[in-house]
Amino acid sequence: RTYTDEEFDELCFEFGVELDEITSDREEAAKSSTSKLSKKELAKFSDAVIYKIDVPANRYDLLCVEGLSRAIKIFLNDMDAPTYQVKKPAGDEATTATKMTVEKVNTDTIRPFVVCAILRDITFTQERYNSFIDLQDQLHRNLCRQRTLVAIGTHDLDSVQGPFKYDARKPSDIQFVPLTPDDKGSFAAPDLLHFYETDPAAKHLKPYVPIIKDSPLYPVVLDANDTVMSLPPIINGSQSKITLQTKNVFIECTATDLTKANIVLDTVVAMFSEYCAAPFEVEPVTVEYQDENGSLVDSYVTPLMYTRREKATVEYCNSMNGIQLTGDEMVTLCNKVQLGPATLCDDGKVLEVTVPPTRSDILHAVDIAEDVGIAYGYNNIVKKIPNTNTVGGEQPLNKLGDLLRDEIGRAGYMEVLTHGLCSIRDNFTALGRAVGPAVSLSNPANVEYQVVRTTLLPGLLKTLQHNKSASFTQGFKLFEISDVVLPDNEWVVTDTIVGSKNARRVCAVYAGPTSGFEIIHGLVDRIMTLCEVAPEDEYMANSAKSKEEEYRVSKEGWTYTIAELDSTDTVAGTYFPGRAAAVLLTSPESGKRIQIGTFGIIHPDVLNNFDIQYPSSCMEIDLEALL
Image (cartoon, rainbow, N blue to C red; front, top):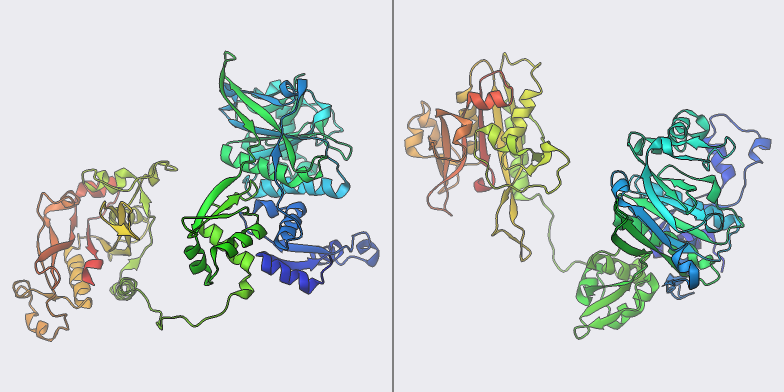
């Protein structure tokens, strides 16, 4: 079947990918060259048509021509989705070529995991070979994160001898002839890495050198004769180089992430097993981990190549796509996107699909709904007028925050946006507060990112700390309006108790020659005025401008006052004793005074903890209470 460029563009759209550009090597050379090339020079480049196609980042099965063309054929019902088989060899081969031994104590220090597979009786052409190499490069850039997570090694099985070994050895003990360069003889591992760092001919390998360069042990894959097959994640050995005459391919993937290693291996095997004498059939390898005494501590067989079952309700798929299909129609459509055979369960209300090893992107019911929509065809979805007639608008809380930002900025305060994560010390101890409940990270990158902040104050104080060179003569004013996260075992979102909730707050700090308590106090009153909350009569009587309050615009039933902060309050340690106040709000909903914030002079110990050299005052108020 042949397509015009327009027809192929439309087919790509229907399939869910985008035809980005139609070009050729000759056109690319003419565009990319810094100087104009002559006709003779341009003639050296091929004018064969090249289609540049943008594919989703999580569709690793579409990163090569084999996977893309196969997926489109299945989508067009020109072929059935293949069934992948993992077939064990018979005889002596089962105990030699199909075994990989891992020296666990050594490899745990650098790249702890390895997975393997064998493609038997494969036939390469130049196009297939180029695609085979290109897929590895694409995976290395994408899923493998520039080989830091996974590194793929492919070898001519007939040029080496099993069983194989994965070890980590001293750099000086590793000596071999690398694939690049293969005309300079044998290299010791340190010399080889130095060559890759300094030689222009090996600049494509230079980015991978830092991954292992400073490690005391380098990972290495060896055969039964101790021949170096690979120095992952850098380069393979020349001994096991694959050529167009290669018939049996041994694939090994060393990794720091076992899950991603299995996805990479399954993808490579699934794409190129179609060129084997028995299409879509792969030979497994047993990986055995042994300790320093040679005792077996772990074992598994790869590749996994397993299928799994995932579910989504028919109603959910319809609602996500704005269509009305029956369950039986969805079952048929699933075959077009390699999610068959699909079945219906729970009286036809739930769609259960079969996820092949090539579709690692299917993680949730929404992924199934998306593929149902693609199979149905986005162009076939009828445009409808929404059942509800609404006008979009800003959320009240966000609108209040935006209005306050403008007003507080006009009062001379500079807005900052600080990080939502902080250390336990900054969030509690350095503020003079007891360590309390907070949403914590199980694997923080460093000590600065241990918990999600429960107060905005540490970010402002650290901003002062890092701006010591600024002038504090006229005072230094900072504020932030943002969210904190508070543990809450009763907060419910879509019928699920999430264990925490966001709270929008406004926080401000003044630092200068004096503490500036009256400046922060004035900001509190200004915020309450802007939110149309009137002061209580007793509080208003303390003002020299009490008569002006007769003309204040305020919401009925909303009042506020301030009171000395109780020394037992959880935040009292942040403030100088006797120089802190609580903001108490009375609203029609509560009918009583509720503390919504605090302000006062910051305790000298807190200032010392943040290395702030000027007296300071601060305030923090819960904005949601003012709506």
